[in-house]
Amino acid sequence: MESLDLSRLKIMQTIETKYLGATNTKGDRIKAINSGKSDSVLLDYDHGMTPLENHEKAAGALFNRLGWTGGMVGGATSTGMVWVFEHSSGSPRLELDTK
Image (cartoon, rainbow, N blue to C red; front, side, top):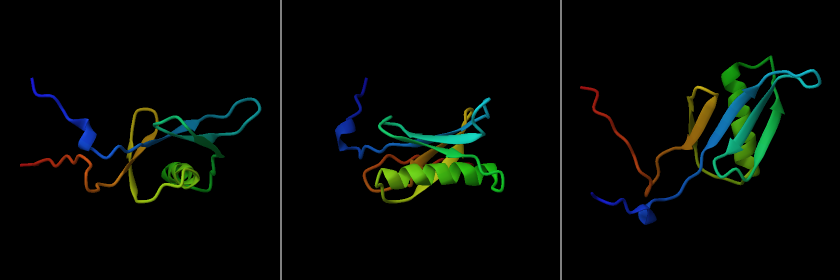
């Protein structure tokens, strides 16, 4: 069996955003946490914005707090959204043939 040499890969973290419903004492919120679990942000849900905009805002707030640079793209999960860095040199890339 072939072994995978991970030492050459650029290690990148992700951001996960999740909707938290209202409680008896707090309104709706969006939580963003990085995959390293070193930091998170909790923002009040803005009902004047779309759900996607709320998730983008929370991910952006955490991205800025962590001092990251570059671009991220998001995708839906069963519990919210996950944000990953756009492809860069040294990171794995999956390209699918849709034929």
